[in-house]
Image (tube, rainbow, N blue to C red; front, side, top):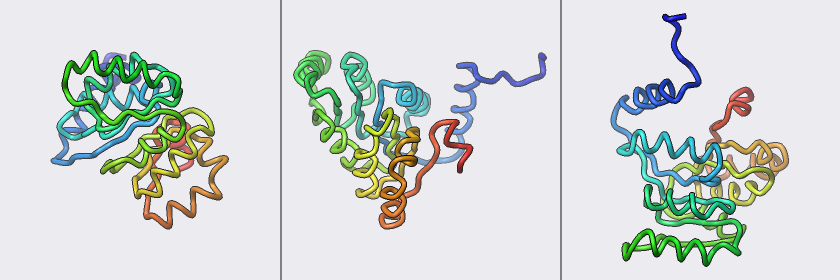
Amino acid sequence: HKWAAPVNTQEAMGDATRLACAAGEWHRKITILGSTGSIGTQSLDIIATCPKHFTVVGLAAGSNVELLVNQTVQFRPQIVAIRDASKLPELRSMLEQKLQGRPLPQVVGGEEGVSVCAAFGDSEIVVTGIVGVAGLLPTIAAIKEGKHIALANKETLVAGAPVILPLLEEHGVRVLPADSEHSAIF
């Protein structure tokens, strides 16, 4: 119908994001785990739409080096992590080429590197978009550093609730749903 608001279109999402970002002066420092996946790229789309409201502190990806490099060039995080540690040399090399003498972010790899990224610096919110139980340890690392969690990984709550819930209380951290499946339980 011509009077119905368009939903689930790129234009409608952009309009809604711009409207939300126009509401007042605020700023968030964010780390995105799973930056090359669906949740991560959508989060970065929002950040790109409202750059004055966000600083990207860290980005972590599984194995997509090319996209992670492009995200790093665009958003200038202080730290980047690649879960597939065998791709660490390729990541460093591509960053050096793309950044052409500009300072490199800290570059880490492996599962431990993703946890380091999650806990790094002064980010206030960590978007956890890593698939499966691989997101559990980085989420715990972020919580222990007092970072709020935008949760897009249901396994973290399903498998890790006995560990996660006490840590949330101990560190005064909030969990916010970052995916439609999670919104139903909050």
